[in-house]
Image 1 (spheres, one colour):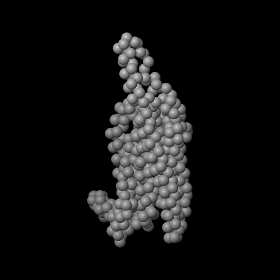
Image 2 (tube, helix red, strand yellow):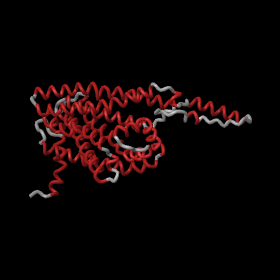
Image 3 (cartoon, rainbow, N blue to C red):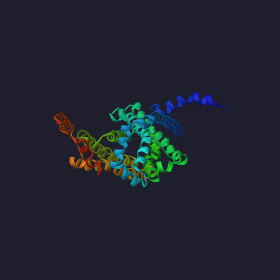
Image 4 (spheres, rainbow, N blue to C red):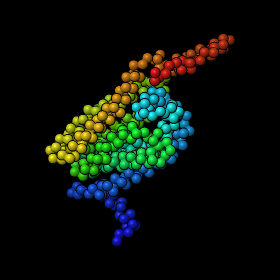
Length: 348
């Protein structure tokens, strides 16, 4: 009878053989399930460590609290209304600070998963490149399993779990995770060498990684500052173009190619399940990936400096110098340039 020590000793070898099979071999569904489960545990541990060490840091950073407050004023309030939650500005800041370490982990995970697909995307046709791309699929599966488990645990054990993870968010994340959790294993088992699968995996993961990381940076920008406003505009414009292509046009092209292959191979069950999922994911892409960047690009790209309340740094310095000169000349100048900065709200 096999002991637990023998199982644990042989586990690394089995995991490697499942992740990197030889060209004439194909891992079984059981082997892939064990591999995905191990990856899920790994990502869960990584996210737990990120929260343990980054959460105390986040709670001490005033600049981060200010950034979350600005984000609430820009889009947070409308997001709360869409999620049907009654978060005050302070409560929104608290929840976003709590989830800040997780957001850093999410775009890190997506960058890594997309990077595993790069050799295949760049044209390498050897088995090692296909194995790495399929490992990118399995990595995404593992993270999504751990994320769904985290959602269930948070809602069932935390006192404020259902407030932090409302029903609408559960539905959104279920749609987001549906494709990989249902089609991931069948596609990896049957189409390990299919370039369309590699491109689709890279496309989805790096689009998400770029969008989330860019959005995290944009939260820190003060739109009342002339230079930071233009940085915000440029980043949002670039992200809109990337999302419109990778999560819009190219996504539809790749889905069409994959469906044609499934039809030719008479994989009708997989094809029909895929149709439903692709419709759901397309709606997700349009409403939550493309539209938000387009909306922010139009909203803040068309606003006048006067309405936002911008003070150019050079003009501010000149005004300060003029005030100092007046004071030295015996004139009491009590007007502060900060009043200009407070004029208007970037989100109105």
